[in-house]
Image (tube, rainbow, N blue to C red; front, top):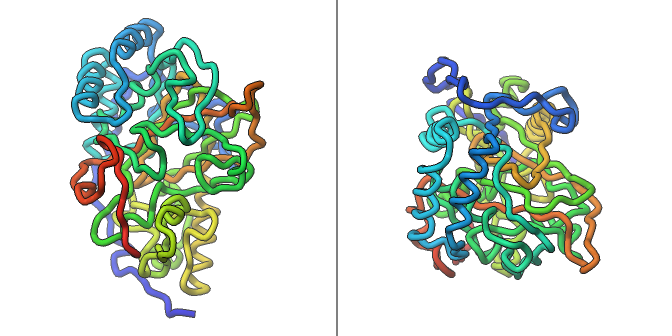
Length: 382
C-alpha cells in the first residue's frame, strides 16, 4: 500500500464569532419523530427552520404565478424571479438567505415550510421531459429558482437534466443507478460532484443545492443530512490527520463518466476534509466506487468518518410545500433506497425538483452552454 500522508494544518482553527444568531423572528418547529437519525436522536435544528404564515404563502404564490418559467435559466428570468422574491418574502426569510450567501457562518441546511405549490400535479416527467407537461403551473420551478438566486447563482449541468431545474424521478430500468433516477439502491452520503473540486484548477462542484417535493411516493424515502463539522468532532486526531492528507482518489459521478466514454476520471491523491475545524469543507461520497483510500490507514479513517456521519445524520421528508437548502461544502446528504411506486399511467409517484447553486459562474465560463445556464462540460481526464 502507499505510504500515508498527514496534513500539516490539522490543528488549525479559523477565527469565528461565537455570538448566537438572532432567531426571534423565525417560526420554529419541534423535531418530528419522522425526521431523526438512523442511529441517534438528532433531528432538525429549530433555528434553521422557517415557516410561512398562510397569508405570506398566498402572497408569494400569487407573485410567482405571474412569472413565466424559462427552462434555460437566462439572466433576465433569474433576475425577475429574484426581484419578486426580494419584494414579497418575509424579512426573517430574506435575512437567513442573506446570511447563507455571505457564508461567514453558513448553516449546513435551511428548511422552509408552508411554501406555495402548484394547484394540480397529474403525473411526473421522465428524465427527457419537462415538468410543465405534468402539472398545472410553474410555481415550484419559480420557487426553487427564487431561493437559489438569493444564496448564489443557479445553474444546471446537462448530464443532470436539460433544464435549469432538474426533475428527479424514479425511472424503470435505472432502479440500481447511483443517481437521482435510481430507487433500489441507497444513494449514500455525499456532496454533489466532489471530484470536480480538483479538476484543472476549476472548482465545478456546487456550493449548494435547493430541493423541493412536487409529488410524494407512498414509500416516503427520506433525504438524510449530516453536518460534517459535527461528525469530525467524533473522530480522533489521527483519523482527522489522515482525512486531511492526500490519501484518497476521487472519481467523478456516474453520469459524468457515461457522457465521456473511454476516459478515466479519477483525481490525483487529495484530502477528504480541508479548511478550519469549526466548519470544515468536505470532498467525499460514500457510495459505489467514488472514493479509493490509498492505504489501510486511510481506509480505516474513511470508515470511521462514515460512521460519524451516520451518527449525526437525520432524515427529512421532501414533501410538496417544503424547500430544503443544503450547503454542499459543509454538509453531506443521502437518499434512502425504496421500492418505487407508479401511477395508473406508469408514471413515477416520487418527483423531486433540484437546482444547483454556486457563488459565481466564473469557473463555468469555459463550459459550453447548451442553453442559458445549462452547461455541458467538455472535460479531459482529471
